[in-house]
Image (cartoon, rainbow, N blue to C red):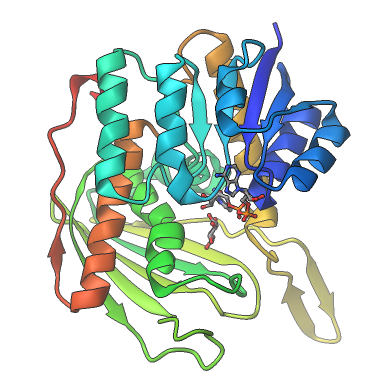
Length: 336
Ligand code: NAD
Ligand code: ISE
């Protein structure tokens, strides 16, 4: 059986997902797509032989579309996921699930009322071989009880229009999900310290920032987020346990040794660094949907809601300078 996928949003990551679905993922084809930029949608559709619709709802309601990938901007996600749930279609929604806690909660409530998990959120680090190795070492007790997690999230630069809040809601949200997943615990408080801004940060953006996250069980996670680091894309993670530590492997794209020096290439951006993770994420999702379980494991709507709630607490802390508590609703049994 071939899964017919509809894609909404064909920008940076949407067009990449279309290419992967069409050429690398087995058991799937891109049947239909939509982007508000019709020319862009047309060009992407031509490459893979997909239909172009004139609105997102038409992709979701297309009877020849079995499942939907959402890769439009974050503030469009919640309404589109709600439409997928109403249409009983499995959906892989790029992060974030929603840009407000209220809209994330609406998704959660709709899915609970529907009675079946249809939503996966594109927190692809759960599919990265390096992160998976860290998870194994934490879960099998190799490093003992996890106490601390140190993270670095650096981008060479970000597009114009990227804001201080987006460092938290668009970038640190990956560490928020990774910390909840690796430590198996909810985050209950966030504190953000804005560092003296890099002279290269534009539009008054507070960059870098330091983020402290506290878990219910008392572990603490620190994140340096620096989105104008210039030199490349650099994501690091170390979990410090009672008996040892485990660090993320940071794959390079090449190593050059000559003239008494060794140089290692740094990936240019997330496309390069996490390419295997995006592919594994899509393949697992396609296999899961095809086997009738709505898309299998990975980040659920609950994970998407919790990450949004923590990211919003970070935004509040950046603005107030104060430690900010995270209040989550009770976890519905659908996500037990
Ligand atoms: P982008 O701006 O390159 O692409 C967004 C596309 O959506 C554009 O083509 C735009 O025309 C289109 N669009 C805008 N409004 C729309 C609407 N209402 N309906 C349909 N299409 C619409 O952005 P991007 O970098 O591709 O990011 C898209 C999403 O993917 C964001 O939520 C972002 O956070 C996420 N993302 C995730 C990762 C990751 O590592 N998992 C990496 C990059 C982006
Ligand atoms: C982007 O949207 C992503 O999700 C990347 O993984 C992240 O590293 C980057 O900072 C975000 O802007």
